[in-house]
Image (cartoon, rainbow, N blue to C red; front, side, top):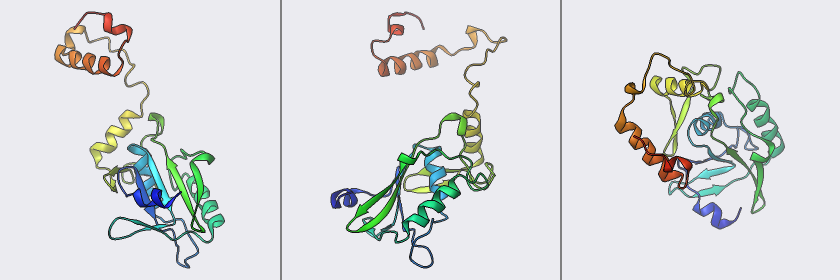
Amino acid sequence: MTHDDLHTLREGWDFEAKLAAGRDGRGAVPSSLWETYAAMANTFGGRILLGARELPDGMLQPVGIPDIDKVETDFWNQLNDRSKVSVNLLTRAMVTRVEFDGLTLLQIDVPKADRAHLPVHLNGSFQHNTFVRIADGDRRADPDTVRRLVADSDPLRDSRILPEYTIDDLDPATLRHFREVFLARRRGHPFAAVDGI
């Protein structure tokens, strides 16, 4: 990570910096990390940088993590504790140590969770401990959002046959709009040659 990289980073939808200093200043996994992990996984994914402080002007100040081995071990232990977080979405390659001016920081790249893992939640309770990322913050998901995430996790939801419905139950305007969006994203697809709704 270069000085330019650090100076261009700002907390937002897909980036969060956390001090991770701990009580003794040697480093600890911040408890707020898990809300950010879950929120990013439930939204668009993102990057978390441990060992940096956000200044009032939004710039980041690297402070490093002196006891990086302990912090990284604690991170992996907590991530794999199902009473702490519902799922580990990370591979080893997604958690890297970053050297900056003699300081060691920990970079965590959080992917967007696939449907089967939604909602990513904390402390065993998806009803009360599901978070989403909005702008530069982690927000507790409201009941409607939690229901949507749970519904989205059902892999059969979009593939069930509904025998009691006919083509007349479909809205032609909605189908036309879907076709336009689909073809705009997939130019040259064989469906483009098919006339229809």
